[in-house]
Length: 188
Image 1 (cartoon, rainbow, N blue to C red):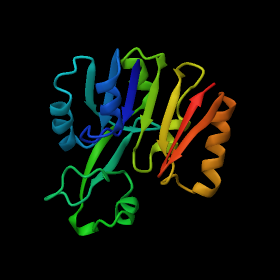
Image 2: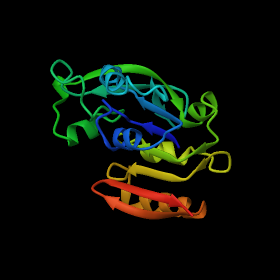
Image 3: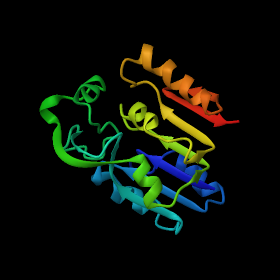
Image 4: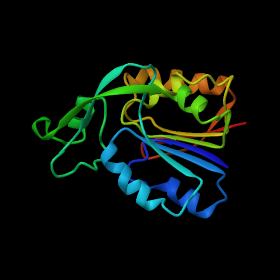
């Protein structure tokens, strides 16, 4: 089994349980918040097949501002994002936020740099960038069997969410479940 998680935070999530309870050949866990990765590395220290990297994934290679809320007391926030508005929507205060300029990379670069042409499970939770990341995937090049992403923060959700689902249906994906703010699709 091969897993790619974008937005792994500190690793305390369902992906950890999947890796702990299954035979996983390779897992790449990515987060843009460098402060959470030490915690993730500690959690996965006994798993040789897990690679953890710090990247800000977007739909293009550029430089973007990345925001971490409550920085002084809560560097480990799961609400870190390229969207200042989204962080405020989660109840965090602008004056307690720290911003960083970061170089971005694409999911295609992750695929290429890790020789990933087939992925059993792609899990994306990027506080607002999920839509752009998924739209940048070339599904003709990489075979993704299962895909979970956060649909709650899709920009212009009323219009873009149905368009994204239609695109995924064209690549033979069907909705397996909708749980809280996440949707999971399986390739048929």
